[in-house]
Length: 463
Ligand code: ASP
Image 1 (cartoon, rainbow, N blue to C red):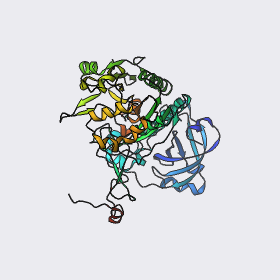
Image 2 (cartoon, protein in one colour; image 1 turned 180 degrees about the vertical axis):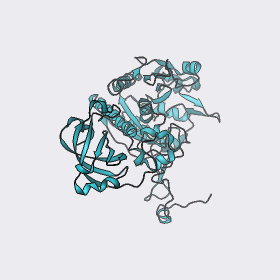
Image 3 (cartoon, rainbow, N blue to C red; image 1 turned 30 degrees about the vertical axis):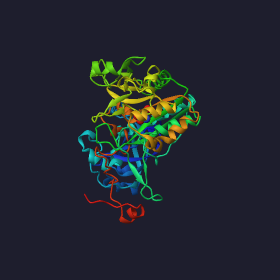
Image 4 (tube, helix red, strand yellow; image 1 turned 90 degrees about the vertical axis):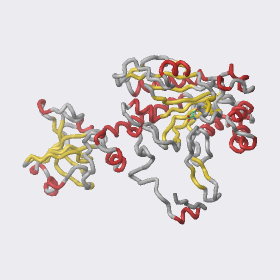
C-alpha cells in the first residue's frame, strides 16, 4: 500500500514500505516519519505494541534505512491533526518492523533546502537528492508533460520516430561531440546537435507528420541554461505553411498549461507576434520578457518572434545562417535569394517561441527546392565538392520528390524549468551534468585504457 493511501484505511491493519525520513525518541515512545514517493506518515513505536523481534530495532533504525511496517491506521484526534502532512489525519501504530536495507549516514540532510547544498555534492549523490519530494515532483510533472505531448500529437496523426544518435555532423551552430569508429579507423560519427536532417529526410520519406522527444548534443561553452545534452520536442510536418505550425504549437501549449498547470495564467491568447526588428528596438533582444507583472510566478507570457533576417554577418565578415541553414526565406524574398541580391535584407520563415524571457523553441519552413538550398549553401561559403560531400544526401533527397515542409523544436528542459518555477534546467533533468560538462556521480568524462585507444586507431597528444 502506498503511504498516501493509508488515510483511506482508518481502523485497519496495513503494511507500508519506505525510507525513514526522521526519527524522534521520547523515552518509552519513539516516532518516525516514514516516506515513500507518495507521502510521509507518522509511525508510533511503542515497545508494548511491537512483536519481540521488532522491539530491539527501535534503537537501531536510522534515517534513510528502508523498512517495512505492519501497523494499525489510527485517526488522529482533532487537535493533533497535522495540516502540513498529506497524511496528517492519521498515524500508524507499528505492530512489527522489518529492515529491508540499512543506509550509511547521508552526506547531506534530505530535509535541508536544496539551494543551500553545493550543486557538486547534490550531483555526486544525485540518487539521494532525487529522494526529495520537490525533485520527485519535477520528474513526475516532466513525465506528465511528455505524456500529454505524446497523446496530443498522436491524436493529430503524428508518428513518433527515433532517429540515430551515431550520425554525421548537422550544422546547428555549435561544436559536435564525436565518436571514433573502430571499423573505420580515422573516421568519426557525430552525435546529433538536433535531428534536423533526419526529420527532413522523413518528410522526403512520405511520413508527413513526425515527432520525437529527442536528445540533442552540443559541445558548447558553459552557460547557466545550457547542458551538453538536452531534450527537444522535435516535430516536422509536410504540406504546411508557417501559420499551420504556429497554430498547432500554440494549441498544444495552451492545452498543456490549462490541463496540467491550472494554477498558471497565460497572459495573452492568441500569443502576441513580434517581429525581430521590433523586439530588438523595443527590448534590445530577441527573447523579450513581456510579462506585465514579473512578481507573479504564475503568469506565462508567451510570444512568437518572427521575421528574422535569414543571414547574419560573422566577425570575419562572412555570411552565416541566423538559425538554420535549411530554412526557406519568406515567399516574397524567394527571388531575391535565388538572385543572391541584397542578402542581408532577406527575411526568413523562422519563428521562435519565447516564454517569460526564455527562448523555448524555434523552427521554420524549409527550402524543399534543391536549387534554393544550394544557393543558401553557396552564400554560406560551401563550395563545389564540399557541398556534395556534406549535403549531397539532402540535395538528392530534395530533388527526389520531397514535399514542402516545416517544423519546430522546443527546448523541453527550459519549458519545464519555467513551468516548475525552477531556476535552472538541472532541476528538471534526472541526471544533469555540471556547468563544465562533468557528471560527478559517474565521474565522467574519464580517461580510457591505452588498449581501447589502440583499437580505435587513436593516440593522445600531451598538452
Ligand atoms: N533544428 C532546429 C534547432 O534545433 C529546430 C528546427 O528548426 O526545427 O534549433
